[in-house]
Length: 535
Ligand SMILES: *[C@@H]1O[C@H](CO)[C@@H](O)[C@H](O)[C@H]1NC(C)=O
Ligand SMILES: *[C@@H]1O[C@H](CO)[C@@H](O)[C@H](O)[C@H]1NC(C)=O
Ligand SMILES: *[C@@H]1O[C@H](CO)[C@@H](O)[C@H](O)[C@H]1NC(C)=O
Image (tube, rainbow, N blue to C red):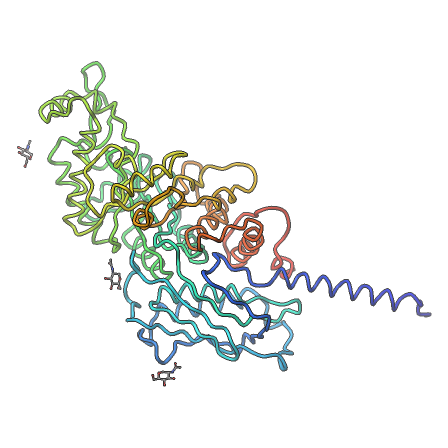
């Protein structure tokens, strides 16, 4: 067979094209950090990593318990995230002449917190020095170390030949805001445990640290109380749509192992229809034309039994959930039913409330705040509680969720001396065509012209995924990567705002989440390189 004279140049051209493609692929596969750290110094010098030789080690000078299971478990997880999803044993073994990274040594410099829960004051900072042959991760607490491991995992990528690669670099990092939350709603639709645990995984990938668990509402009461088991027996969608004490414990531990706090919300006095089924007399009977009807309204605020109930109920909640905060809701109270009830009218008259139902609401919420305070817990409330001039505790946090004028509201709340959490621009249950993550990304929470002190009172924000149109079938793709935009806004410095750069990093980060088993939806057209590799 005669060799065509054109074959050789043709082959060279094809090879050149392949090489160019590979170079491009390599550039795309470079580290995509999300959320972007406070300070990154990248060297052009690359190190290779041999997966079968690489080790995470807990440094000898670390102040944390050498057997810290939280760290050991994180090492196992991150090893799998970095190497496990790739067929590394099929990747080329010719790593001989390139400089190598053999270990990541983790040192905790303050006391061990391996057995404790993270809290609002936890130190989440870390620094990472990647050099040959050992990289160092230093953090004051295990919570910072967990964030550092995530960042380290984001630095490692496979080059065009499939070799695991990392750039020499120095990173120092800490969050801009201490409260970075995701709200999940398990009342409108019950979310299976699997979905909740996956959410905690994805939260860790995005350095979120608060799971705001809107656990019950009008529609169903899935929280299984040991003190009042009838609440979920009668108020859940079914006896299998409940979170048992064991389930709750599983969520708390899974979250703790990822540096995530769990804040339960028990929203009252509105949004409580499901409570009425298992706790007779708790809700207000509504009247029509002076006759009692079968309908019930918000919690009945005029009965002593109401407060006896809540004292016992919150006693349980405060011991089940370790966090300092309990969210008490307080939004969207419908005054119509209260207004129809003659006993409530009489009570109002006696108290001199002058037909102002916000004063009755205040009377109620003040009592609930006092109950929670007496249990040595702090409260978070939705903004109406502040708007309706309820007398708050000094440490009550106000969550700003309403409408376009959230910056004005942040100013109002913080200038009154209260701490605030922002969620108004981040209602992810509201969907629209196109890249709405950009709108979430562009929000600047501190653009309200506050003093330094007022700015400090904004402790963070939350991306909220309400459950009316969301269940386990669409929960994860609706949340991610849209919530990632909020994650970067709450973690990264104020100056990290370049949308073009964010798009590139987020597209890669989304693919990384998919490769780690999170069904995050695409940002736009294209494909993920790991899908192509798996062919
Ligand atoms: C541990 O501390 C000792 C004494 O301070 C020091 O000499 C040694 O270099 C440290 N080792 C590491 C790995 O940091
Ligand atoms: C937070 O946790 C640390 C470490 O466990 C503890 O020392 C500190 O007192 C806690 N702070 C609050 C506000 O609970
Ligand atoms: C409810 O409690 C208040 C204050 O302790 C008391 O004055 C009032 O008599 C009680 N009402 C009923 C109906 O027991």
